Structures are given as C-alpha cells and as structure tokens.
Length: 464
Image (cartoon, rainbow, N blue to C red; front, side, top):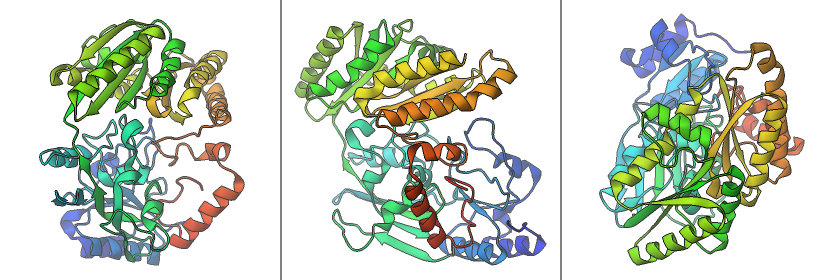
C-alpha cells in the first residue's frame, strides 16, 4: 500500500531539513511511537522536525513522489490515536514551530505557530488583559496545532465555545505540498468556501497547519468557584440543566462521580472537599463586576441545594480555586492509572445527561465492566472511562466492544454523538457509522481524496 523510507528518501529528507532535524535511532522511534491513547504503539520509520513552511512543502512533495505516509505530530497528547504512525513512514513533528509572532492588543488578535503550547499563549495574552478561552486538560503540554486538529474544547467551552470559534485564518500545507492561506484578520468573511473551518477538526488528514490567526476577547476581571456535593449521581446530573434554566451561564460546570474524585485524591495525595460524596458539581462563574457574580453564586447555591446538594463550598481566592481545579484537571490521568482502560468522549444535549449516565451504568453492569464518569456537564460532554480493573482477560476481550457499541448507540439515540473533543482518529473509527450515515461518510471520503489523492496524509485515521 505504501513504500518504505529507504536510504535515498532518508538522504533527501536530510537535505531538506538538515542533518540535525532527522532521526531514525531506536530511542527516538520508540519515543514518537505513542500518544496518550491507551496502550497503542506504532513506530514511525523516521522523525523529521522541519523549521519552516517551505521545508514542510518539500517533505510532502517528496512523500507523494515516493508514496510514503506522513503523520503530523504536535505535543503527543491526543486521546484517539491521531498522531500514531500506524503504517510507519514519516513522523513530521511540529515542535520547532513555537513562535508567538504577534499579539495585537488593539484588534484582539494573535498570530502564532502551531507548536506553541496552549497555556503559553494564554499566559502571554493575559499579560495584556486578553483572553484565549479554549483550555483542554492538556493545555500545559498540548500544541495549538493539535488543538485545531481535534477542535479542542475543555471546561470553559460551555460559555465561550471551542477552538473553532477563535480561529480567523490559517496558513497550511496541503498533502500534495501547496502552501495555502485561508481566512483573514477580519471578523466577517464570506469569500468562498471556508477552508479554515474545514481544516479545524480534520485530525491531520487534510494538511499541516503552519500558522494560526487567533481571535481574542477581553480577560474577565473576576471569577469564583462553587463545589456542590450530592448523595446521588442522578440528582447531581439532573441539577445541571436547572442552573441554565435560571438564566445563568457558568464559565465552567464540571460533573465528577465519587470514583473519579478518589482517583484524583490518590494521584495528588490531597483530599477533595466532601470527597466521599457520590458526585459533585464544580461550577465557575466569571465576569467584570463582582457584585453580579455574587448574585449568580447565591442563585446557583440555592438551585443546587433545592435539587439535592447537601453541602456547598465557595472558593473566592486564587489559591483555593487553583487547588480545586488541580484536582479536577488531574482526574483523567488519575483514572487511567487504575488499570487497562478505554476512554469514550460522549456528548449529548445537557438535559439528557441523567439518561446517559443511567444508561452507561446499566450497560456496564450488564457486562461486569467498571465505568467512571466525569466531564464537562455544562455542554453535555461526559467522559466515560471503561476500566478493566479486576476483570479477567477473556471477559474483557469478549465484552468490551459490545459494551462500547451499546454506549454509543444510547448516546446517539439521545440526540448526541460519539466524540465531543477527542476526535475519531485511529481508535474510534470503527464506531463512526453509529454516529454518521453512509452518505456523510462518503462525502468526507471524497473531500479526503480531493485534498490527498495519494492518501499519504495521516492515512488510516477517521476512516480507512
């Protein structure tokens, strides 16, 4: 299907990128064989770290000539196998594209390269009272380019939206090596097809992003956090929509069940306030007027209490808020450390969260599988972690796929879909027909074929 990276190709890659930017030693290949997706590992044949857009263009033209697959790689924090070199070939790392080119205070925009770490951009913007809201759990290590490839969200998507809502334009290189500039530094743009938005969420299958024009907003001056403890996960889940029905839109609204909190406590060797609660909601509000936030906090406290919360904790100073967020943000890694696992990224209309969680527990109980639920309840995005735990190998291998299929069918029946922010990538592609019709998938294949006639750009992701 594809050709191998031979000595001739290796020499040409070295000529394009320089001897210091091409690696094929065993240690490097092993290091770049994985991302954060379960226990999957595929060695590329060579790693190339280009330093500019022209080098990327030349690499892709070479790959097309020799029919060699190219897998773009950012920070390696993906959760659906998007950066895995399943057919070998060239791993094209964007780690040297790490410049923040400009922060435009007057027009609330920034221009950055795709290798900039998300948190670094956020902190540089905040120095000028500007705000870039998308904040995936991996923001301290994930690259902007990867965030765009997966259309990352995070806790604050409930109020501020996801990555696609903050991208005005791109420079990218097509799979055949053409350099394209899409979008513009304007807020309105209906000049032909929106290639910028097509690239966002394309999971590295349609091209390689080399420059990003970002929209910014004013940095909120104040924020406060509530932690509400419940005796049942059902009451906790039902309360989510009640908050929005009151007319309040929190900047974050996270749901965590007891086992998720216990995993976080173990991971950080710290106690969660009310850590023995069956479930908790972490609710953040932000804005420019503290008086208004106080009224929102009071209203939310009343709502959660009326709906079953037995204790409500308020964090107003930065230290307490950061401690709560540190516990929440470590849950994903903590849960994964328990045992072999599969993490699903279900998303439903938020009024359907109680039905989703109830159904997940019924399905997992039927197959004897452990599940831990947590996530961004404010926008209906519930991360369902399926754990092998103490299950024997035979039962795990026999029941896992069936249980996942049932969970996804339940999710779609509730008006949801199978991935909110982690993408389809390699690990989820066999489930895509549960969420999308044959006509939609066929159209996506046609788009892929137009962009990538030789199928060298991250092949085997989203669909075969």
